[in-house]
Image 1 (tube, one colour):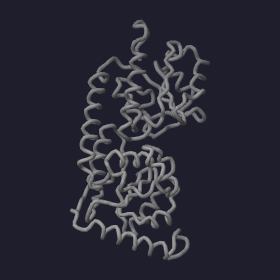
Image 2 (cartoon, one colour):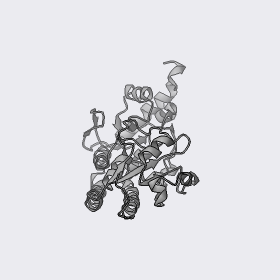
Image 3 (cartoon, one colour):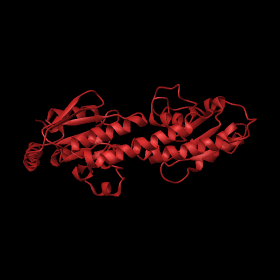
Image 4 (cartoon, helix red, strand yellow):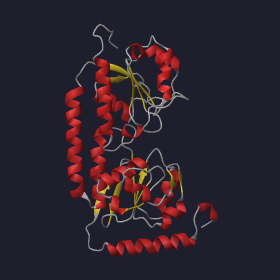
Length: 308
């Protein structure tokens, strides 16, 4: 193996020793198998004991599925729950530290289909590590992810009430909001460049859950760049922004430069923290509840206002 592979013979030997110890420590436990989001059957001789997560949202899902104690490595920005912050870092989601990953001797890697470098994920598979690839796109898929991850980690009993609670909360929100009068919504991820949400991602699903209509649902791209002119032309009744953290971004008020926009005229400029809307985890329902309340507020404006 050459230096270009990114890790040494010593690292691979350490990985082999660590994996052997991990397997020895779980002898006698039953084999498990699930299908990942690429259709690959992921099979383990026993539930995983040393898991590495390659996306912050996947880290959060693993904790929610009861597998937090089995996590031995995460990528940067894995900041929820608090226990995740103390785990070893194995790089960024888009720039993995392969040698660090092998040194931690995982028996399962949970990878992000569209966010992790495909060559790195394939290399880990070639080295004999089980890889589960996830790409949740809809709210309903969160419960499925929790269930499959719990099977792989042997934490089914812990995950079961979490899954049941998530499904019940989702059903309540759908019953309360999804059949209400439609409200056109512009979701703003960022200001420069101006980034929104297309029709093939979680944000669009949440807007629909709330009885809203994403003005850029016709765009298939994830996080598409859009123009101010396009927003003005589609004239949303509500604008919901995220930003970078829990604080309302100052640039949300820049829309007040266009008082003819229905959202501006009715003072329907809203903020929801990004980690509650942009991560495919149970907390997405917390963000959905805020989104639905905001959209309902726009729905309650003057009934003489034009419909979308």
